[in-house]
Length: 182
Image 1 (tube, rainbow, N blue to C red):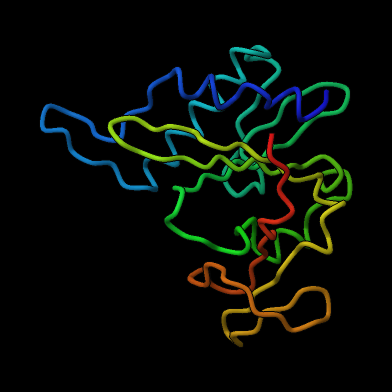
Image 2 (cartoon, one colour; image 1 turned 60 degrees about the vertical axis):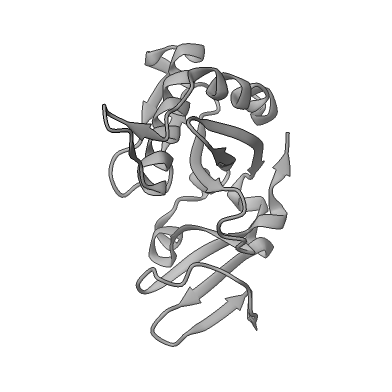
């Protein structure tokens, strides 16, 4: 199953759902974290509708991916959302360095990253869908940040990118330039 075919109409399907940005009688605004979680869950729900519940599994806590599409060659997907114009980072957080170290080679060969860029009014509008992966092909695109030393490296070189630095310990980011738009 090619990732492009899997994701080609995802933006249209998600936009048809009409994911709200405010809830309740008093139209309380949702945080970007809550909106991100909703987009992720609706995305997984659409994949379950498309491929069947028995072919799609939600990842357990602590996994470096959000969903698995089963089959002869399973696809592991880590879903990333970004409110357009809000962050402007050069790279997106994907996992801790220890999670990357523990990751099996077979997982690195089948994990992909889905990036959903959205705007919000009364409802979410997915404007751009992009993907990167599999991870084993992205090694040169990974940036490691060590918070305790405030050191950022790409391979063996010190680098300086705009990234989220609030995560504890060492964490891995994927350059946004490595994402391919559908």
